[in-house]
Image 1 (cartoon, rainbow, N blue to C red):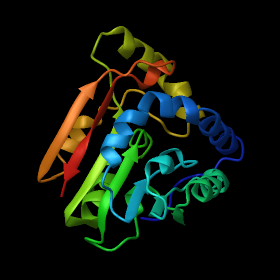
Image 2 (cartoon, rainbow, N blue to C red; image 1 turned 30 degrees about the vertical axis):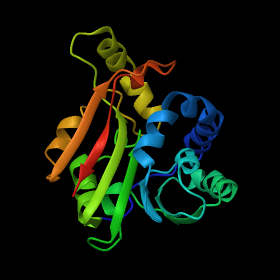
Image 3 (cartoon, rainbow, N blue to C red; image 1 turned 90 degrees about the vertical axis):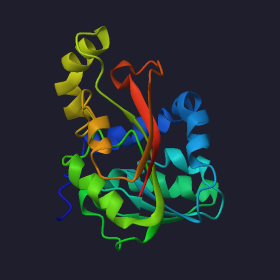
Length: 212
């Protein structure tokens, strides 16, 4: 599958700018749980959708990051962030459904607030599982579909179409957990929770670790 991501000359730079200015807030809201999920990571990490590098602050200095990031408008900030935190960066301009790494070549794959955007979630998770070594793990934090008939669900449904357009494919109401549960991982630790923030459409969330 070739890279089917369409780089947009208007939305791309705007989204890159938004991610940069929201970095401190996202660290405030998600930082503690990310530190727990990222602890004891290996020397090489693969990240699906690295964006402008929000997660690089949680990696040890000298870590080699293989960033699967198809949005070219993110690359400049991503490189600067890698330099700031002493990360060895390798950018691959690919979508998550078309990762070009070898089978069973990675120990640690990360995805945070990204699976909402991929077009074919089943295929993306197949790729994650394929590249993981037998002892490897996939760590994730994702926003998911709210409970039916709740106020949050109403907000998600109301904003879905403009949100999907403005934020380059983000689904406010995608039910991600069943996809992960059916992906064939040998062991899954997953938790559903509500981390309330000013970004209401990305409530509620799930977090966890999937073992190959």
